[in-house]
Length: 267
DNA sequence: ATGGTCGTCTTACGA
Image 1: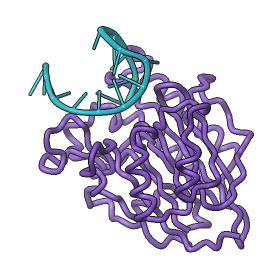
Image 2: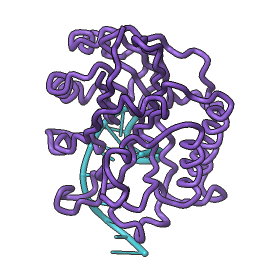
Image 3: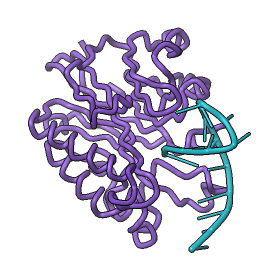
Image 4: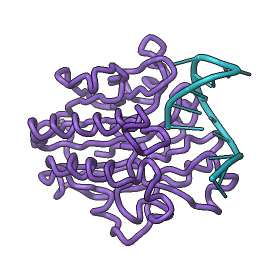
């Protein structure tokens, strides 16, 4: 089973890139973030034509929005909270039936948090911290099993998840209060699948700002996108790939897709 | 320290 996660930064604008990716990678499941499309305008038909006939999505006008596209039937999780009571379409979950029982997929778009890393001065940062606290409490209360959690978590937790640990220590996405909360969330029952495959001493990025003339030459990246799995799925973990080349495709997202291959038999 | 560039609810704002 191959699952892809991608912050697509406008699904409608980047449908051609998604088509190219789907044909090249043939993922069974695609989890998208920042679709930026209300449900009434979701491009269901073109995605259906690509083979993703099972679609769960939750979007709004202009901002945020998440979607799970699948070649196989999935059952949407209906009992997920309205995080921070904002109804701002940052989470969707669904179940996939496999030979050895259902696997849960969670797709998250965590608030970016604005520029100033102080919840007293910046409402967006306060929202980010509150969001992390809420999801952590929820997973603590509902310990995950046979679960894959993916998405743009907007936090680069490790030293080598950013181009300069020193220079970004006070930059939102790499500050201690966010990292501490991300770690608490992960400890509700997940393993960092990307770092199971790539040692923590090795630089690893999934996002490069648009604000660099030459993203590849400056290589000032961050690992903002994540794939977590519960320990019961660890024996199934085969491969993770960060599709870095996609950052150089025409009109790219600032995030690149990441795929995970798991030895699971879909039923 | 600043500014750089995208996308959309476009000359403002979020990322």
